Length: 182
Image (cartoon, rainbow, N blue to C red; front, side, top):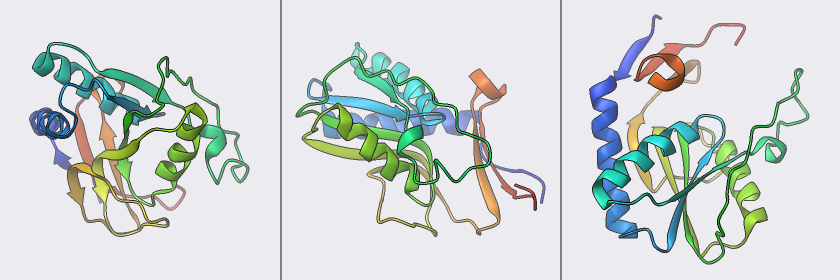
C-alpha cells in the first residue's frame, strides 16, 4: 500500500488551532498549567501548540521536553541501543496541571514511560494527555487521551507517520502498510 495522506498541511494547522482552544477552555491562562512534549516526536506538537497559544493568549505557557529513553519497558530489548535525547524542564511541576503531549498514541507504552519519567520531576496536581493522532484499537495499557487531534482506525500491520515541515520537509500525516522488515 502506498502512503495515504490522512491530514495535509492546512488540516494540521486547523487541528493545532482547535487543540489550543480546547486547552484554553480547560487551562485558562496557563498560570497553573504546563505543557510537556515526549521525545522524540511529541516535542514538535508542543512547538506548534506553544506558538499558536502565544498568538491567542499573548504569552507562551511554560513548555518543556521530556526524554523517556531509560523509562521504556523495551529499553534493554533492542539490538541497537537507544540514544537518549535532552530533557528540558526548567520549571517546577509540583502541584501544577501537566499536559503530556505525544504525536501518536497506539499501545500506550510510550505514555506509561512518560508518566514514570515525569514523576521524577515532582508531583503534579493533575496530568492530562494530548495526542495528535489516536490509533484506537491496540492498547497494551489502560491509557486514553484527554485531547485528540484526529482518531484513526488502523490495522496492526499499518503505520501512522506524522511529518513536520521543520524536520521532514512537509506537514502531513500519512497511513501506510508496514514492510516485513520494519
